[in-house]
Length: 95
Image (cartoon, rainbow, N blue to C red):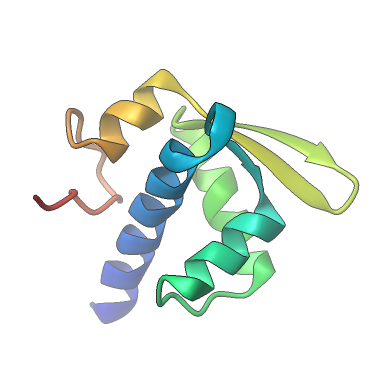
């Protein structure tokens, strides 16, 4: 299903954005803006839902600060973002 493909890709893109951020850290507002710039049209609520899902998988750590989520990539999340590990529900990175 196309919606599943987009969700899996969005999750990978979120991990890859965090991989490029200083300290592997960003807030949900910045991540939503960057997702939009990279071709994903998701609401901030959708982005927060996906970030919480990634946290449940142990791929990011999430701290709620006011109305945003501050996210930090974990070691496992880095492995997935770089294609060294596979998690069902996340697209595999391409060369």
